[in-house]
Length: 487
Image (cartoon, rainbow, N blue to C red; front, top):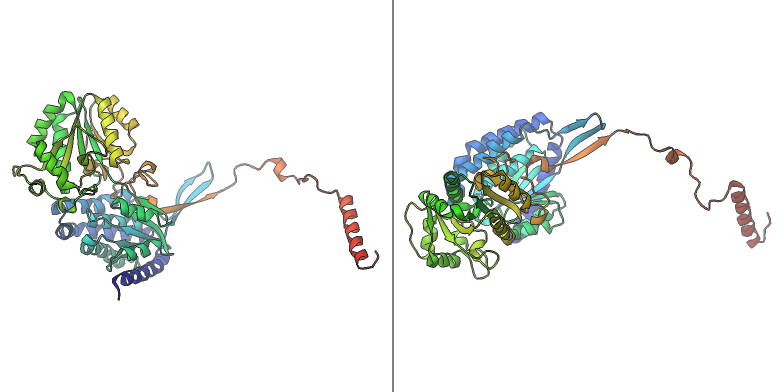
């Protein structure tokens, strides 16, 4: 069979099976749901190292040990955050307003999975979907098909052993654009969870189906003169190097307050930041991006040494990230865009107001709605950044990679980070199980309707009873006369 036709047929079969499984699972009790999800989380934790290694080997992106940590966040940490969340039956009651909130599942969900975080995204989406009593079918990125399928299989097997119906969690194996399109547009598909590049997210939104999509991240980091510089330097370098910058909330540019810029640079150098000269910076511009502005996938998720060698220069073995000092920011500067690899832009700004302006420019270049990071101890500056930025995660004195996904902050643990209306998404939240249920509301009467509403109404120009009787007689007479009859 033609590859595209085979993919379309597979999508149809999997959606049909998932829908039948969902009809059973939609009647599950909260105890059933939590027992199955507990088993899924434990299976994901046990497979975290193996799946992390598979993801790195298949895609060539990142660091296997870091992917293991992301898999643990996607299972253990996510499950701990939603374990006590009610997703079945009455989930809230307001006795004063006499209302009941009743959870209702969405149905069959399509989960689009990126190549940069294939296993962690799959584990996470499977867990929150089943917690909300949904079925889910994954469509992997072609370059991460094997590890994505394995992650889905781990969760499906654990769920079925714990009592979930077969077909509740599944993954496409015959992968094509046409098959994915069929999966998203199928009449039984209720919702799309799209995590990946801009084209993928736009495709999800264009189907006419409800979709949670995430926009790109081009995360600026402002380091204020009031910051703890040692901490900032240690965190920025470690976070940018984490899994070779494959998380969308990874730091993309440092904006250093001028009075502390030199000291921050020294501290970052000691942590493994290699500051490029003008020739090296220009070489990185050409190496990282194609002439049309798209990123060169050959350097995505690669260590600093690999990227430097690809660009044609060498760096010390101790270097973990490449830092490119820049003056220009905005669309015209390639290195001002999102870089899913170990290259970090560097700017200097005199005062937080100028730092704010450069941050806004970076966000507008490709990260609207996503994330801003600030290192400062001056709460006035922190609040100013929180109020001004068109992003929905403002991280203070913490890593972008681990802070945005909820490991080092109080944000909801998630691997699908909403970018809100300004970023082309329906929400700016960290997506979790609560986003995958509808809520029915049962409401009792609190107040009697106004008396005028209950009283019989006399409509304007309505004939009175006698006039109405006369009208009927006249019409009857006319009908009879037209037939040469008489009343």
